[in-house]
Length: 282
Image (cartoon, rainbow, N blue to C red):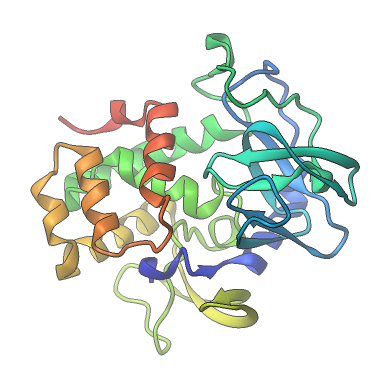
């Protein structure tokens, strides 16, 4: 369920969409808010860490050709990788770090601490992040009308948990929140279950298989996410803040939605960077 999305890392599900999206190059201003890239390990797994060092804690493992959304670059430990030898580390939009030695992109990555140019923050980038936001607005607003989850929170969570819609769960099954089937059951909104190879870390990481819900549309995925939050009693405090997206998100996080200590910051940063608040219903 969505409560395990930080612990149970959907590695293999990302892989199925890599051929289509992993090598995507979008021509936009060099200093735009984020850069689309892909993992280049030639078969191995890229370690996503808490800092720009090979000694920093590993928090996720990313398969070859999976998509990345990079915020900026910093200097760190020198690494020899499949793409290059470099001391550059890339900070992802989720606040974590990967070595640039295993990153494929043709776009310039700004240095951390330098602001993107205003012109580089587009409303819609064809084939990129803006298109995902545009596709998510309607379903998120419908979810807000039906279940009272702020649209900005829903969109940002979907961005974080589906990798801007590039995961296989999203591309193949319209599953944007990693919601699983339980004992073969999938509720009243999903249409079935799909088995994927994945990696679960509790606390050590190991490959396994799991069943995930299949939806007919992105709208159904968003609705099932809203239904889950609404019907789970521990998230009830969040619904005392239906008109305060940040307070809603904080309450959901404190209730145990995600185990990552940076989850609130990761999601709220996306909400601010892309001004997702503008889509919240009055």
